[in-house]
Amino acid sequence: MKYGVTFFAENMGNWPYFFLKTPDLLPLIGHTPFALDVGHANQNTCLDVFLAHLSC
Image (tube, rainbow, N blue to C red; front, side):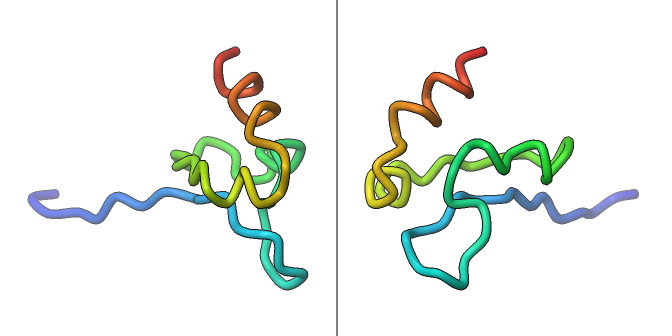
């Protein structure tokens, strides 16, 4: 394949209709690359938990 599109899953802010707000949901995206939005993680008061989980 000569061309392709790379996509990432991103954690979302603290609104009830968004998915992937906390790191306990990361297994649901499987091997999809993940982009940590530190602002959204901070909104959800779980930035430290995301960072600890991703450093494993």
